[in-house]
Length: 503
Image (cartoon, rainbow, N blue to C red; front, top):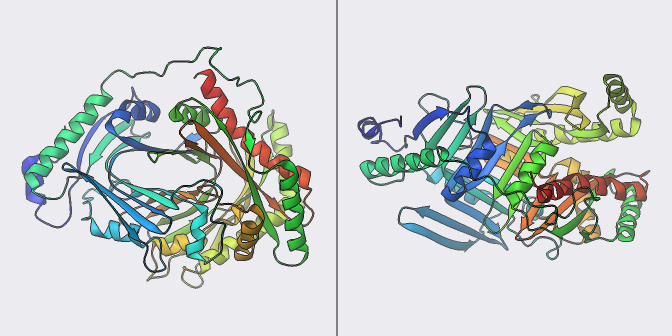
């Protein structure tokens, strides 16, 4: 049953806030993947999932449909597309002022607040879901970055979904939520009701399962998944970059500099099939499929960039990695080895200090604390050293201020952050694009959850690319750092090959 009904809605619709329409159905015959596949023709724009510590499914998964507004920043212009029953309208204006996030803030403030009478609406609903690219730091910190090379994509793109399908894994329930359009309340209720009925009909239809490829069509998942890929930076050039970074470190310019490389290739595979393969290969706390129209971001990030709930701000620095053991005894031995590794510990402490300093920029004095320090967290294939740092947001600051304070993560830049980013720009010589930025949501009530855009594939038509970095310190071995980036890329491109072979 869809609620509220027309009479209830009209009784509530007199004020400036909007009451969402909602309907619940059992989820025992569906998965988040089947929901998105069934709703692609309904304008499904993203899927957000979570597997905590690689073994426990997060409570909610979200599928966003038919964005009412899309905001992008590219080449200094803010492009806004608004859609409703009458059609779509796009406007492009020059970015004014020094805050590139102001257009997103204004859009959240412009739209009437979505009523949450029962206090159970998920934070992304009514808010904005999308990504910020690494190169937006040119606006945040005035850092001169390369203008050419790399992906020619917006610095950010955020979608404001009108309709969202929420998968509750605890209640085993699917809830369809939609925001009525502004205007005549009676017409708005009728249109929103029709929207939910259309989604429910699609969910009740048989699933059109993608056809498996034959062996002749597949490119060979058994091969090395980086074989045949095109590298933007030849091995010799990357190793020379490492040595140049070490010269900066020895000169006292930085303690650590995170250098990255990008590999790319071609595939005829459907992007969502690649996401399906990736979520099987690498279940992570932040799983996302973000369809931005001409390109898609497909990710399995293990690392939070920042989270704001109420006034509590949190970052989770991750540094230090070992593979999982084949046996419990080997797993324990590898964890003890990780905890005893002085190089891993030193890097981790540096990132914890960075996190404390970042939060200190926007949190109340004396509230920043390390809640957990250097604990071993086990995921499906690897284990990491993880710490948790939190603080209370200073009154007068909001989620956008908090994001600026921590962006980008120290794990993808280095320390000290500003100088490390300047050196990265000089050495890499091209835009990073979405890599090393953030994916997540800004909630309408001020909550925020963003992950670091790592372990992510960028799809553009039949081309895909993957970027990965390595933290360079004074005693780094250039050959090993190159291999580390290649291994990270290999884990992602394996998903492409498996999808090509057929799921």
